[in-house]
Length: 121
Image (cartoon, rainbow, N blue to C red):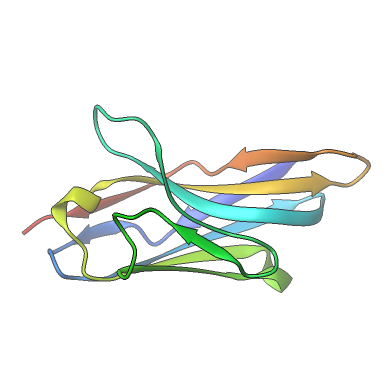
């Protein structure tokens, strides 16, 4: 099995910063892309940012210039540095990883349990 454990969410004032972390563990052979998604109340889950194993990144237009995604391949960990946070960034943030497990051929997407980020004064 593969587990993704997120940390770093919380309550922050508008203009503040938070750093999310997500560590993958289990019978992992290789991780392709990793990413962050978010879901606000009453809305569909949306992509925030992704990063390949080679370090290529992609961001949603709404977070470009404010959020930075990075990863430590040796630790199977992905990070999301969030600066200049806005109330509309309030959501549950989910980590995603495209993983090849031991004794398997295909890559499979795994998800974390989610961490709440609330931006409010």
